[in-house]
Length: 400
Ligand SMILES: Cc1cc2nc3c(=O)[nH]c(=O)nc-3n(C[C@H](O)[C@H](O)[C@H](O)COP(=O)(O)OP(=O)(O)OC[C@H]3O[C@@H](n4cnc5c(N)ncnc54)[C@H](O)[C@@H]3O)c2cc1C
Image 1 (tube, rainbow, N blue to C red):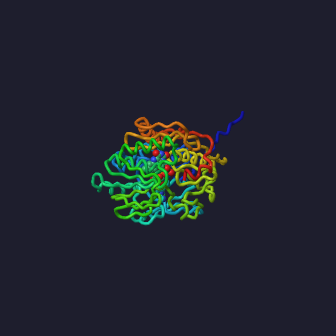
Image 2 (cartoon, rainbow, N blue to C red; image 1 turned 135 degrees about the vertical axis):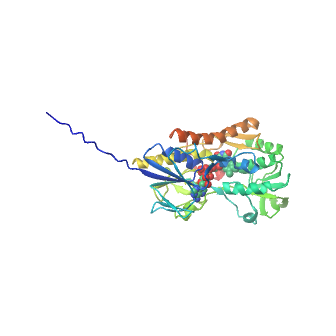
Image 3 (cartoon, helix red, strand yellow; image 1 turned 120 degrees about the vertical axis):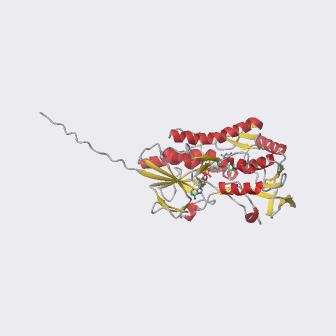
């Protein structure tokens, strides 16, 4: 007679704690995707107790749209949200210090704190320039705009996509808007798209000054230089949309950053200083690849940062970033837009759609970005993105 030993082996699963800094397009996507591994505990640190759709901030300022979305079904079950601001990363101790004085420890960290406005060194800009680039700046700008008289002159400095969207939205609300390009307006779209953008801005009454360079900002006027001549423009509110830069957190924490403060990572989104720190979205510079700061790039980056962490936990090598651009879609007020299709490296292709159809496409894009995050919360791993040839350093000057 034989007996069988039925002693059951009790297995303990080792848990891994991943902290995600920033719950924007990249951070929220990353946090949700990490839930593919049930042995991962996820904590998100974010200053606001809700998701901010940054791509609607110009609407928030003009009171034509709402950027806040409750975290409710945007972040998957079990994700811990800490409403606070990271003020220092202690990489050696694997600890993040928070503005409240508390701290949070991690096994892996995903750095996804986005970007804010980049102010050029122009006399008076630091004192008088307003911005639409992040939640705090947008709230301040909205207060200023609300206090203006109907039809007051507003100058938007910067002819990139954000400046165009803001100028169109404010003109739609009845202000006398001048868009001072600083160089050509809409330089990243093709010539057809550029002409259509200027035409649509004109229909809303925006005075587009191509190639006018702002040389000083004062309390109630802006000084421009056009072909060597100075010009004075009255301005009740001067808004700078002159590009983005990353917050100082990475640099202040002793991590390697690029010239505009982005965490420097290798091709797998891993910090070049520490393989327990990964990054995604506007806040990172990926070695060998140039990606336009955009929610279009941020969401795939968030998903790939999560995949890289999951690979490291599993003892695998994370794979290099692989993603491509599809289009640049710029709203011009509530009823027009320019939809410029692009090649995978974000350079303009031939196809351009304008007018109401493009405006509908832009609204679909805005809703789609939130839908992507919500779907990833419900089904971790569901989000997919266009892959293809990486965006190379050749496009660097245009993208910057
Ligand atoms: C008016 C406007 C219109 C735009 N339109 C478009 C568009 O049409 N298409 C497009 O692709 N892009 C657009 N962009 C750019 C786009 O919004 C950004 O590129 C995108 O939001 C980047 O995503 P992210 O997740 O990296 O950062 P964010 O979306 O900025 O998220 C970062 C998060 O981190 C939080 N955070 C910041 N500091 C800390 C800290 N120290 N600790 C913890 N959390 C922190 C922030 O509060 C925020 O919640 C627009 C931008 C603006 C301002």
